[in-house]
Image (cartoon, rainbow, N blue to C red; front, side, top):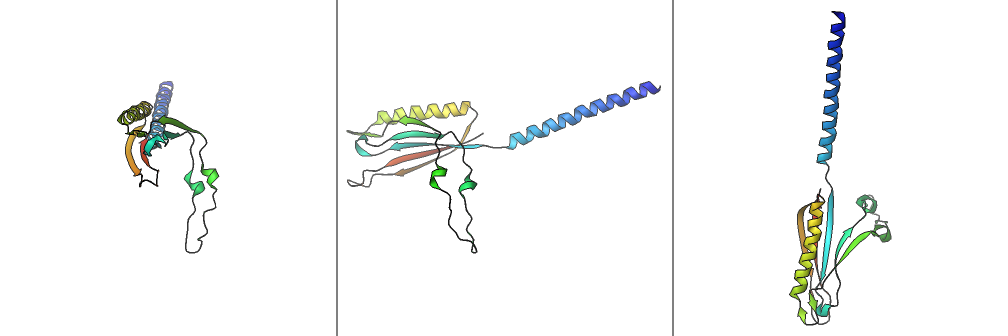
Length: 161
């Protein structure tokens, strides 16, 4: 009877070991599900008359830690942020050419449709890679008249994974 008793104890211990392993794996998987990653893609479309501007989709291919370029101002310490602008610049990025909204004859609707197709292609690719589009922000700095000659339409697409 004693060997049978040892067999039952061994069987229970092996089962318990499997349960513990499954629980540990489940906890690791659960923590991975809660981790979120965000990504911002920006499209810049020129609204400069005569087609003189530049239009692009910009996608940074390297990460930056904002804390490296952040200082905290307090009543006791109000020294300025000493981080260098050159350190903030991203050298690895994807630049996709877009068409300008205007050409020499004025607004060009065919260019807008072409940009929509290229931007849709980028968004669809990101969706296939598992990115979820969660927010879109747009802004305009428009031409202020004959002497300005400047203007952009900027859109930021914010994704999470």
